[in-house]
Length: 462
Image (cartoon, rainbow, N blue to C red; front, side, top):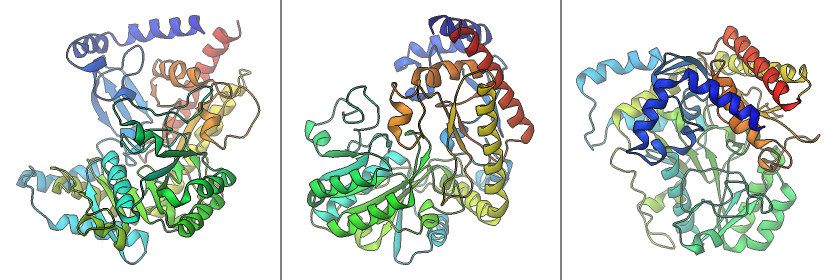
């Protein structure tokens, strides 16, 4: 493995000399040379100069087919002309922040709620998924008068202090450790972890903690945890348990909202959470997130509940007119073209998943791609490449992140660098497709994985 990494790093350094110089400068003024840890891969990131559609270009002139697509926010690709053209008249008029209410906020709110097709919902906007998840937990605590939170191991809900436990896998301890210093110990003690898609364990957790739980927060499609869909049984059980114990059910749809259909996954599953988090796509490439929920809970923003009023103030730039207008253009387009968009990128993603698995298989190396649709979701545009150490079905985040079950280092670091050498950028071994990706680019991407497979075979089987 050391020889593989040495080879990859040497070749990467040859290809990205200008990015290395910029990284050296950045390291003198910023912590580790940047402001988002996931973007600062080893030995250093390339520095972007342009992005359009499916591709990005770095400071050295290298072009990459990009499957991260703005942290999965750009379903139409980078800088889509559709949104730029629609925003141009407003940019010319002036879109600097004013701090006042505008009608576009109303239009986007109505659009989102209309696609959920449930009466009595209310929405409040903010600027990030972290803020949305934080406010949602606060609303649940204020409404119930309780202060325990149940979440799944491997679930990432942003850097909310109420949820910074059970994100990273710790060998020997699983997902049962806090993930951040700087928080009061009682925060971690009141975050209870359960296994994603494990219905029996979920029942046991509710039996033990149900009377103290303010909320259960879950991603119907878990992102960082491994691109896995919830089973219908799991979410239906969660809904029943929350009703029985008076717990607020929160669906985190920051990633999944409008990604698999022009609505939330909750509608496809036929379930109604008490609160939902939306972000990424609803901003059309801008900083927009939202909490949607039942009126009686959402009114905690303005009316005192069991614990008083919840100070859900969206922030200085919340409901920024330009941001919301971009989101409105995006959702309008997705709604009007729903029958074309999702099947197309879903089929391309399946071609990519199958092609990658075959490419490695031909070199005697086994990989398994997660991200495939299930019995509820017809099409999925996500893929994550995993290197299993034994035969099993990927059902849980533990399968993805336990180094005894999957080669995490090979996926997270070696595969990343190796693909960059062949003009492909991924995160966690894969990513998602946008409408800008073409069948030809998918074929080139499969060939890039095939070349990587040959390199891995040369170093790992020698």
